[in-house]
Length: 145
Image 1 (spheres, rainbow, N blue to C red):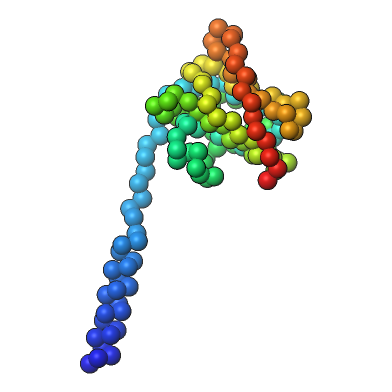
Image 2 (image 1 turned 135 degrees about the horizontal axis):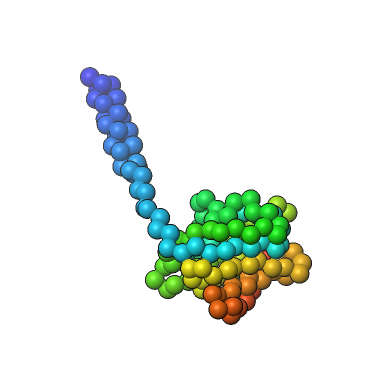
């Protein structure tokens, strides 16, 4: 009898533990509210342009790339998620040479162009051009993975 009670308690505990650690998957719908031209003038890479949020700043898993396997000198029209309340974006890129690039506090609106430029693998910048042709340049940090 003691053995049966012990087994039942173990099964009950296991069942309770399993139920406490499972979550229903939550899917948050993505809202795209701007389309931009993205130009890669650095190296073949996967590129992420994400709203600047605490969650996006702390994680190294950014989901599906904004522009996956973008070739050198390729230009592509991409859709961006609506920005966070601060109106800013972050930029992340991993190229085929295993270089990681990042920039923050990027302002970009619908119809603008974001070009990734580089004189060398360690000297990369982002140039954002608005609809009137005005440009803003952002420094990009680079590190080998």
